[in-house]
Amino acid sequence: MSALTLFEKLWQAHKVCSLDGGEDLLYIDRIFLHERTGGVALVSMAESGHKIRRPEHVFATMDHIVDTLPGRSDETKMPGGKDFITITRRAAKAAGVTLFDLGDERQGIVHVISPEQGIVLPGLTIICPDSHTCTQGAFGALAFGIGSTQAEHAMATSTLRISKPKPMLVHFDGALKAGVTAKDMILHLISTYGAAGGRGYAIEFAGLAVRALDMEARMTLCNMAVEFGAFTGMVAPDEKTYAWLKDRPYAPKGADWDMAIAGWQKLATDMGAQFDRMINLDAGLVAPTVSWGTSPAQCVLVGGTIPVSKCKEDDKSLAYMGLEPGQKVNSLTVDAAFIGSCTNARLSDLRAAAEVLKGRQVRGGTRAICVPGSSAIKRAAEAEGLDIIFKQAGFEWRESGCSMCFYAGGEGFGAGKRVISSTNRNFEGRQGAGARTHIASPATVAASAVAGHICGASDLGVHNG
Image (tube, rainbow, N blue to C red):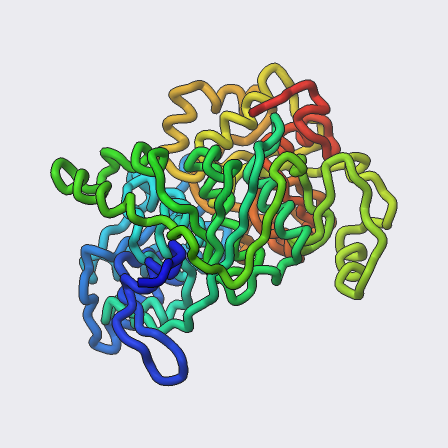
């Protein structure tokens, strides 16, 4: 038997059959929906007379367009948003799927609460009509985003027709320096090899620096595989994975847990397995990084300068961002700071930001917002007093949701406003029409909020990590 990569093992284990046109039919273990597209898919299924084959394997949450202000209700900042919420609630109940509704202590961003609940497990296939589903590959799962129509097909048949991507290895050897994060690692990769560098590939992240990451950092790494153009990203499970999942609500229990561990231990790339592409990076060369343009590929070090334009895309980004080549990034005044999203709003992210904010104040005139990734994270942060640190520093402390990571005609920062953000996308209008987004780690966002301009935590004398 030939040696296989982790990706090939997962694909092979779920392949039902080969189809005409070079596609494969894959078995899908778990399906997650959110209110922006999930309710539409559920209603469409009901109207067409199709039933969900395994409703116990379908989950839905309210996250994308919900209001995150304290005391929220079904009303949203997005015009017509309330309809998405009420339709999803009604359709989920009628279909018999589990819903993490507003007011449910388990509610949160889909890619945050799925791991929290133990819904994603090593070796499973999990899909959602959301491109950042690859986040959950951090658990050694085959997790990827789909469209609403594909979600309907998967709910009705537990299968999907998919073209198989090629396996890629991204190897981070060595050790990260103090204060350098998984967010910096993935921005370093994308800015070095381009936003299309992973197109057509399923990426396995490996190497000493990846093994040293905790599970929340691995989720950040895998989350932005899609920003590299990849089909998905994943990390082979290990003892950290098992410890993180143990006793989660949907994780196996008792003898089933022991059996699961025995199977999960086989989920690793075989010695001698071949990747179609390999990228080797020295983790010791990664430093705190921030985006300057409108693509995650357009990044520099926090203390760097805006580069000279090399193409029309650079020209367009410079114009939109209101920048000139040669400007120092740390000279850029920020109007707002945002900590949130499925990329960087977990408890460790909030702790890192709070370490920077402790005893400090957000610069006057800078709007600062923190939106925990789930209701459970919000409660845990409050139990540690992190909310007090954020609020005393001048941050708004919000309810869980995607919030201003995802602008859909709702709440935004305003045209021309420069925002330092822990999110995953800095496209034009991503955080509101005309908003100028710079993406970075939570510690960099917090430090920039305090300074009133882009800077790193070390510039304030804080050395996390």
